[in-house]
Image (cartoon, rainbow, N blue to C red; front, side):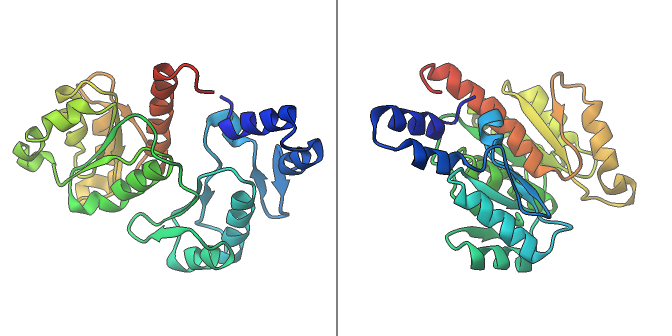
Length: 257
């Protein structure tokens, strides 16, 4: 996949709007920039269609801020700082203003992608699952696909889910976020036609085993074709959905690079 900005840069050089020296300066950090404590992968948008995200846990606030600044300066976007504390997000925003931070999703975002074609639904079983659901929804929004959110539609009151069947059927992809026994993934997978990406969460009582019960239930789902992410991995689910949506977008608009 070729990022359209690279194509535009090459066309500008060919047309004389940009000098080769200016283009070389913009491309100087490919494939990565070495900050000493991190090698920032600037080549990822050309390979995968979206940039490297910054995983905040285990990093100092200063390291988060430096990596975010490097990514934002590269002119690729969007830039995501995942699982960030308020301290880490504040440090990054101080060095690189113009971003936003969602404390529920624990996600910092700079240079979000404009709205793209395609539709997604994030269905969340219960309010306790919201941090993971919001991570998925906020990341997907930053990548250009703001999803429809269905909150508190777990199987303990399945009529709440059945009332949303038209919304589920209209989506291109559905992300199901559920803890406890994870049954919502099977219910949605058996009810709706779009691809289903299930995310088990660590929410639940003792026998939920911090998400292991939901994970195994989703893996053993009787609804065929349900794809399952790791426990609490809302960001990974958003990236999986983005790959599906990007492929559909390319199929619908074959001239898109």
